Amino acid sequence: MSQGSTVTTTAATGAAEGRGRSGGGLLAGPVGRNLGLVVALVLLCVVGVATAGDRFASVDNVLTILRLASVIGVVSIGMTFVIIGGGIDLSVGALVALSSVWATTLATQQMAEDTHWIVMVFTAVVVGSVAGLVNGLVIAYGRLAAFIATLAMLAAARGLAEIIANRRTQIVRDRDFLGFFSGDVLGIPTLVIIFVLVAVAGWVLLNRTTFGRRTFAVGGNAEAARLAGIRVQRHTVKLYVLSGVCCGIAAVMLMARTTTGSSTHGTLYELDAIAAVVIGGTLLIGGRGTVVGTVLGVLIFTTLGNVFTLNNLSSSAQAVARGVIIILAVLLQQRLATGGFSFRRPTAGPPSAGALGPGSPSGAVSGGSAAQGGPGGTSPAASGTAL
Image (cartoon, rainbow, N blue to C red; front, side, top):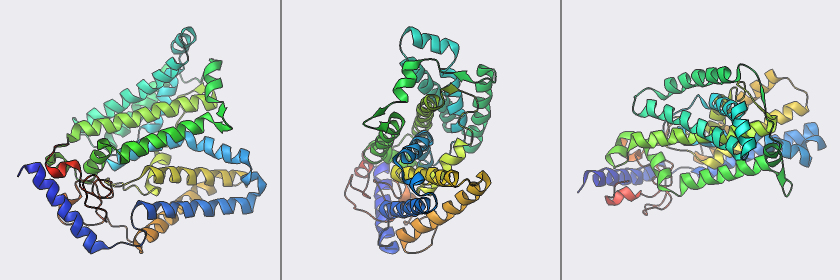
């Protein structure tokens, strides 16, 4: 029997033992965790209606909430993949700023006027992806801690953005660009549609592709994933490039919403994105998470800010409430998912048992079918095929 086959067979056996021991709650798994977030969001909406009345419940206000959630939502989708893969990216806000500045320079805008405004979009996405590539290479092959590498990129990217813009705000002059991204389709803002498309693409990539299974595997146990045939370093680089691409898309959306490119764009986006991802049920240690949970986390924080704004409450009080919301929402989803307030990572036999994605479609520790390729089942590597 090959080494990869041995490792993955052990993983499948450990997962089965974990299912027998843990049992879990009635709503254990992603459904239970997401249901807790839905309840929290509904309660927050009830508070909004009770305190602000029709001002909160109006269609215009709902669209405003969705517009505000769109930009940070796209950044959070990329962050979800990185954290599930066992990493962290503190540079996302700075990458949004750098992408927006580079895409709105006089040279870039002149090129867009001579050809098409898609040049600005392409520039922003390329800048974000290249910066993400640098992050990934330094972390995967330079063996630098993700926290340190992305913290350095945060400082460098923000500083480079200030140099390029000369600490000035650059105005977007292309009316066709602004008209496209500021428009709507059947009454739904274009920015919201972009967010939905990115979220759907992220869900499919995470739950229906080999890339997603590898992401869960690397985050669950990188060494066991390597023994199973996954090129962990290469996959880590891809995760950070994906995060950079999401930052570039978010920069385009922010440019359209504010009609500017600025080195101050994206300030504290890294904290907002990490908070949304964590409240959405993604483990900071990697190996488990959902795109749906991240979307709900973003909506919770954006709705909270809107409620506070409508009631003329200070930003300081909002910050305190955000902290309380994080704790309560996580407690609630843990209660619904496990029937108790346990925050320990589910155990599943030997250390390699979590290699193929605890909580992932390819090897849930807390339960699931053992059928190959099915939810909670073994990955294709279980049959001896290298991923």
